[in-house]
Amino acid sequence: MTFSSSNTEMHATPDRESTREREAGRDLAEALNWLLPIHFFYEKSGLPLPDFLFMPGEEIPYPYRSLLVHSNDMTPTLAAFHHSKLYLEVHEHESSEAFVMRLVTLHAAASDVPVEYGAIAIQLSGLPEEMQAQVIAGSKPLGALLGEFGVEHYGSPSAYFAVPADDRIAKALNQRPGEILYGRCNHLLDREGIVFADIVEILPRSNESEKWVQHVSNR
Image 1 (cartoon, rainbow, N blue to C red):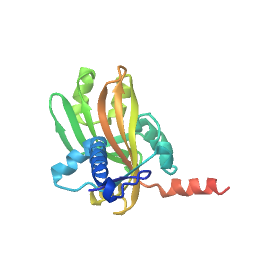
Image 2: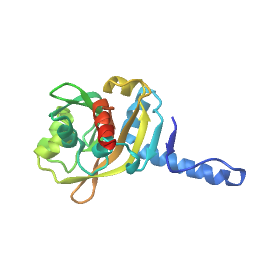
Image 3: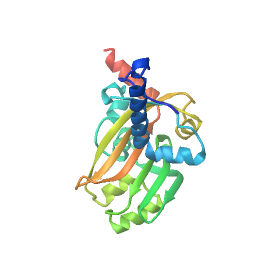
Image 4: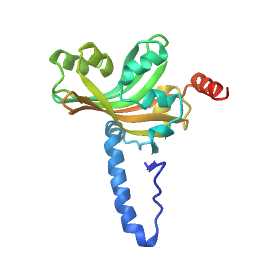
């Protein structure tokens, strides 16, 4: 498991080795904090995380930049992009009276095509009681439930990344192992600014959309 940043050099020199080690430790702690939900399930399964390369949002290529670099919920964003309602496939979950964590794939209902893979940690307190029961049941994406129950909230992405698909991600998203995918780490906050969900979201590659972007760029 390694983490790196596209705009940070961390090569060691003798006179800066201790500083580099402290900075590397802080970078690792920050990365693990961003990746907390998905790191939990990988650690639980005894699997190493794939190598995440963190980068500024403006370095994410289109069309993935349009899908990731914003503060909106991913569920309605992806539903609009794929012209389909989405349904939730839960691979693993943990829950208590206070929280729910799950490893999931979102699929387009019209085609069954996977459109996102990731993990989420949800604090239940503060959510409407009826909604809490549905969150625990895991029958609908959180974004759909927030809209259905009219819960005021906003997103605050903390990081964007590229990541090579390992076997687990590749299988869930119908990608080739090693395919470079793009994603983000996001927080959802209530109207008082309190975080109630941490999310890691990874998108599959879309050859059709990439070809369209290339065609438009070459005009």
